[in-house]
Image (cartoon, rainbow, N blue to C red; front, side, top):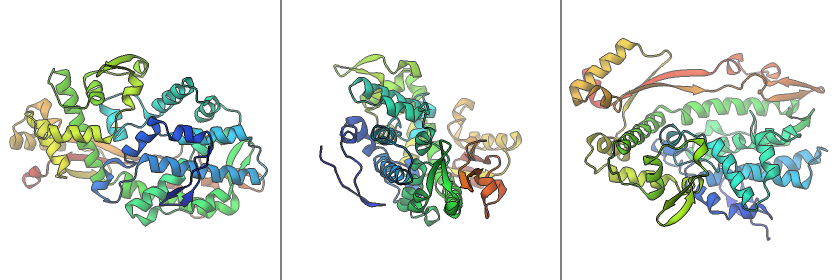
Length: 413
């Protein structure tokens, strides 16, 4: 099969779809990623953030090719089947994402996208695409641990691509990282993926950029509000579905609205529009359009709460958010609930759709998972090798607490 060259806005012309990778690329499950935005509702803050998981996955696969090429030049033993399997694994690493990823995981189904990605790989394996080695590498079960590290670690090609790509499409220049420099500094030592010491400053910049991107993009306060309002909408729709209310939804979306699905249900067969599909196949018909088309119809529906929340989200009439370093006190929460009750006249249970408390977390690397620096034939965790980073960047997770509520009650507070 002829190699394909794609024009990527971040890297320029890239050739990532040689040979057997093209079989995955052409599969409907993979093409679906064109219809799932990489950053969900982040375009409410950064209008350019309309890139998709399709873009990101191709970019990460391109970086995987570059990384393997560099490692082979340095004498690391990577066979052709291992190289293909590593590329297959990264090409499929996001295949299990649903529309608006985390919002859907919290409300409509209770299965993580990583688990669904593995189920998709198993499905494709059963359909004749040889992914057995790719699955072992993806799960971390293969003997050459560094291949898994390239896919999932504190410095993997997944992160290298999404930081650079998300920075590009949001216009947040603080997220720009020296991707090529970092990849050229990669090596393998005692089966671990490491960065040579001369690449230390590039890795330090990577960690700073990641932290800045979390607070300026991924955990931006308005992005947090929009995502939490989407979760409220989906929660209300799920409640109405359980109550027997007939809601508009596309056939795949309706199935998940009206049924409780667990990890063990994905192989079950269901009949939709005269066709028998597995629950997994049905899930892989869902994309962002299913959710947004339903919300548009719900905004005109007769359930006042669902209609109001849907209309607010569609028109970007978002709730107010307060963020602070400590959890909100029970006294303050009661004040907000009382003001909401006086303003909206809702019952106690329905007030939960108009306020929410929670926390946003910037995760730090777990023990033993720090970026590894190779210096004088010794592996040092980045926290010991760094020359400019503060130790707080390696300690416990950074947490901030939020409360969201309608803007209408601000004047009453």
